[in-house]
Length: 112
Length: 113
Image (cartoon, rainbow over all chains, first blue to last red):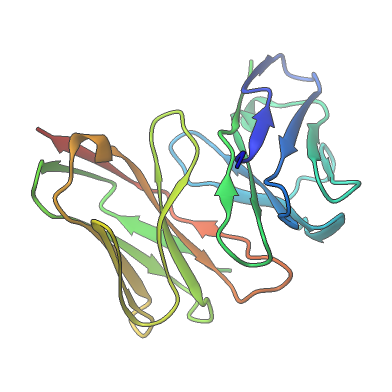
């Protein structure tokens, strides 16, 4: 069974540029999570979906970050006008209801 | 807001010795506690999850939960060099359409041969 896949694996941007991250969850998993993990810190939740609905986006910097999951399967996280403080690894995870979350390998973002 | 703290920040153990990691949390309403491992540059691997006070063993990894003390620990029996990684404690609130995990900052474990 394929795990959670993410792309790209790495991204390097100048401040002010936009970037999108893509996540393909495990088939049949209805819940999808996006976490931000700054270097040497634990992951911090940004947003999560149950099917196509946003359950919690309270930690998403809404002025520059957006996330969608239009058909309740794949998801895209976008950063408009990236800042150096956005440098981090972005992790996607999926689960069935409240069961174990399976994590993807992450996208490592560097903003210069 | 739930806060999760881990100690020590780093730990060096000899191969075959017991390694013990600690995690404290601030909100006793959480009902789900997990330990993850993250090798350098890799994703997260769940080691053990525990839901009630007491002990749960998964292979060489044992978690102990004491809700009254707001404390959960992880013990690694007979650690091997391949166990060298960052260990993350994660706590989640009761199910609300999902389980958003709140992580500690991690303990870096180095196992020397």
